[in-house]
Length: 87
Figure (cartoon, rainbow, N blue to C red):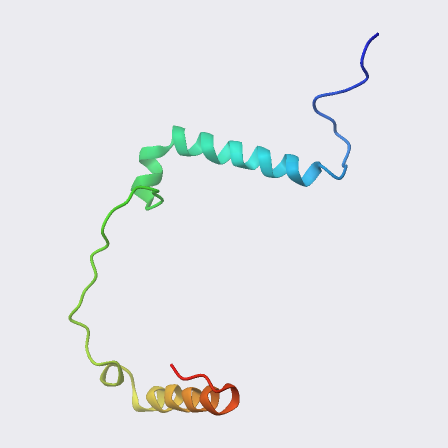
């Protein structure tokens, strides 16, 4: 007796989102394997590496203008008064 089941159906059913996620995941895995060096050159990498951070940054309120500093302080006061959150 022949089965009427089809492996791939073109109908949209309740399982369609799961099938799409599966296909996109397979495509991402294949792209990661095939284009590993190109993705690494573009900055997309899953490899662990250290990030170099410049530690010699100027004092925050000297780096921004007076108007911006007042805005930051007023936003802080508003959040502190309205929601009771202190940063």
